[in-house]
Image 1 (cartoon, rainbow, N blue to C red):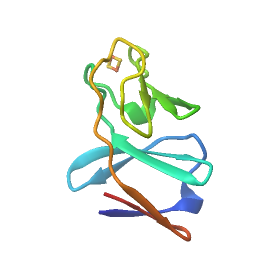
Image 2: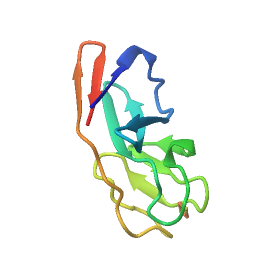
Image 3: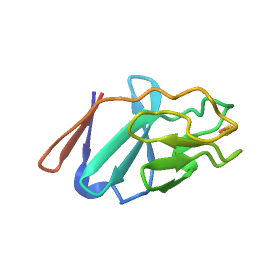
Image 4: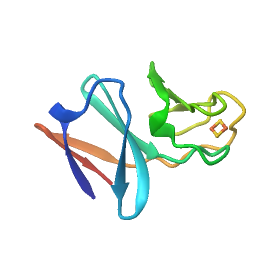
Length: 97
Ligand code: FES
């Protein structure tokens, strides 16, 4: 598990964090925080470098979009989902994993 500060997460700006040796993409949208695998399911691209819009993150390399809540690949060329990770928020503390 990793702890982050909600107040230090910028709205709609993904960050990459290390969770026990695995890269995780963390995104804040309003009062919610989402955590998905950072590695795109299409090829070797870091999702945290992509743009976030309306509950989705877009892979910067070929444009596939993933649902931040479910990890589902919503648009091609990716078709496989990415893993999602549990997030809990308590005050200003965000726990991922
Ligand atoms: Fe992400 Fe191709 S590497 S869409």
